[in-house]
Image (cartoon, rainbow, N blue to C red; front, side, top):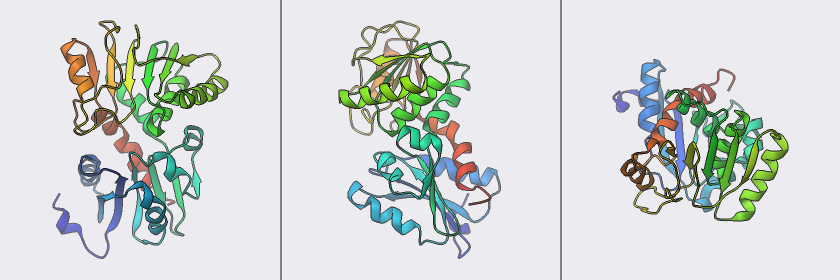
Length: 270
């Protein structure tokens, strides 16, 4: 698609909002999908907004008549939820949103699709989480969404690790109340013998070479997942490959969400 050829007064604007923003690949994927779907006069662009400016930026979107909606990425998923007029049950339950849309009256509505997108991305590889033992590092917006999605799909065990223990304790309490049949408990940064191990933190993004958790005690059949999109193969995933472990990238998760995101943002009643 030649983006310049569609920039006219009829343009409907989509955005992805984050800090940093240079690494995002969602605009390329969304714009390609818009072309495949033959959706005219619509373009996604990145907005680089720091946390201190987020409230003003989100409020300003209400007054941009041709703004349809957008993706919310790190680190704004939780803060954005508090700035919206309404949100889905999934967003309220997880305490964050990763997609918003503007209606014709300037009202902003949010949803959280990270959990559903992650689960769908695994299913595209015939990985069913039901009855599996799952380890999850991170309790931010995406981490909470993935935790809810895993519990809703009846994993056998869900082990949650966060550097701030209070946050993992709070999430475990909420999940256990909602999904009493799932064994949910706190773990450390050294998981042992799980079927699926997930990094839902920003560790490993960009030039960050750190590891979110250790692979030392994981078995040979563990699938290592990372929600970080840039680089596609994070230090965690590269190390997993060196250990001959199966990997699942953040780009796979985003690809599975593209259809969900566009359906939400371009909802006919919005």
